[in-house]
Image (cartoon, rainbow, N blue to C red):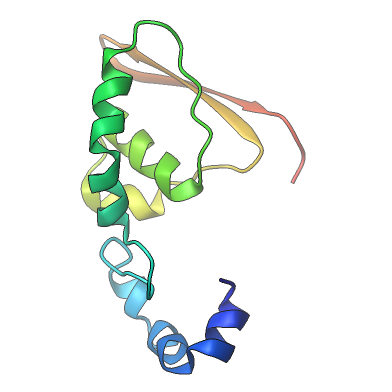
Length: 112
């Protein structure tokens, strides 16, 4: 749903969002019939286990919330930072695990 659709169909929720509920706790905020970042992280646990087992390169194509959660896990970012990690659109992010941490390369595939 877009914010306009929320405003039209769920005016009380729209006002709640406008008052800063989502901004105050973006990690735990859940839209009606939606997921919070914590929900997404919990849902990704089996995926992360499978990704860690892989020995060949893996390509992940997903929504930004999923990409933020995966990136945060592999880059060892604090949980509170997950909703605020910048994930550029139209970009391939190559992540390699190294002895000194995560190494990343960005490949822009389209201009926004």
